[in-house]
Length: 305
Image (tube, rainbow, N blue to C red):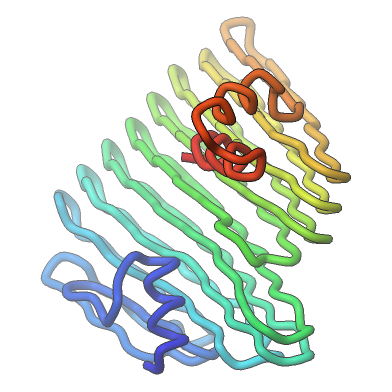
């Protein structure tokens, strides 16, 4: 890997080089390397780009890294990754995509990640998106996540769009069985003329299933954001979605909720708050010696922390 690729790897996965243990590293549209461990098997798909990850029943305190890096301008790819997580597991998956575009053509990565989480298994999924470059080409990322949680399964997703992504359409579709739980924490920042759209579609099919979806975002300059959430309660269940956004300059943000209770014991809540930084917050920090710009940056960083 060259220095540009190493920097992208650090931004999206928090590592400087090929990790130890189970991993799959994709660079410029090709599988750069992969490694399985005793309990985690990574198999390259034969019919389309992507991998299958099989995690043995009862595997605990292990992790797998699957970052994607694009440093060649004009590349466009669609990758399929399927996670088969056995019963009783407790594991962490670190994904993410970084694009460096120094040319005039658009670079695009679209990934479809499917999670099949077994009975009473627990999984934490971390995904970061990052873009950079000194050319005129745009960085485009369109992640799709498909989730099926078996009885008692738990999936926690932490997703972040750090910077430099010109266009993104993020889609999550989930179906939950009895006593299953889905927690999503999303963070997005947009600048310039960037556009970000997020759609969550969650079906609570099992008794005592539950979801909590939290989206926090900051829209600056002339950027636009759209947050769409649909939660269907098909059994005795609980669902809570919330969208909190800071809007600055000439940006636009919209939140479109839909909650559908199809069972009398379904409890569903949606919250949305969109607004600018409060003047008293700026004044308080400026009295401590910060400039107005520094105060804004401090508030934004704390909001997205």
